[in-house]
Amino acid sequence: MGLLEGKKGLVFGVANEWSIAWHVARRAADEGAAVGFPHLPGEKMERRVRRTVESIGDAWLYPCDVSNDAELDKLFAAAGEKFGALDFVVHSIAFANRDDLQPGAFVKTSREGFRLALDVSAYSLVAIANRARELIPAGGSIIAMTYLGGERVVPGYNVMGVAKAALDCSMRYLASDLGEKGVRVNCISAGPLRTLSSSAVGGIDDMLGAFAAKAPLKRKIDADEVGKTAVYLLSDLSSGVTGETIYVDAGFHTLGA
Image 1: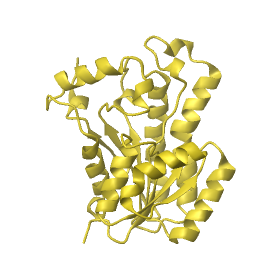
Image 2 (image 1 turned 60 degrees about the horizontal axis):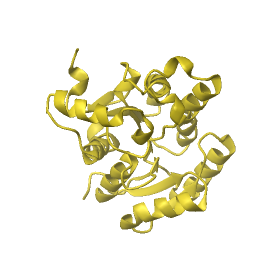
Image 3 (image 1 turned 90 degrees about the vertical axis):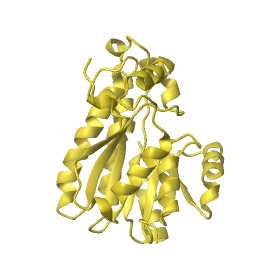
Image 4 (image 1 turned 30 degrees about the vertical axis):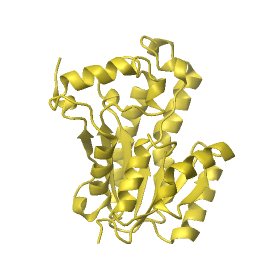
């Protein structure tokens, strides 16, 4: 039996085969989980996601704009009909305007750009958890993907770093709120990876090179390493862990100057 045999959950954020969310979902499915995939509305996005997840088999897809409360309500109503209960939810969603993700641009962040980044990248976790708690029994798990840019200045990360800081703090408050019900909430802080989202960050190539040179393990991480850590947090192996951020970054976060 796999570590997630018989468990059912939703993975938000699969866009293509390079998505961290996809590596998490694939690992969860390999361990026996049944996985549903909420995705951005639109036929083009549905085709892209369906093509990415086809190796899982009869995957359940459902369109949802996480910034729209009515669409979130419909998604979780449909998930309840499809799965009954949910054992886990994975939040791997982030968005900001490309112009706000260039070196030296944070001071020029517009009010609307700030609102957009915080809404999609951070508040969406709160909105999702609020609805998921009705379907997740004791022993369930919610995890979100964060990054060191929410704790330290990373050139070019800018407003997304502020959004990740809000995500991190939201995770801890959610862990407190949902702990009484026996639901765990944690974050994974992954090292930089080449994904559709990271391609919008100015200087990403320099960031990847510096990371590999300076990290204690002297290498980049692999997205599958994030997937394996996610399986631990989604499984009963982490039954006593909540309100935590686990770093999968080859030790980079431990360094000073």
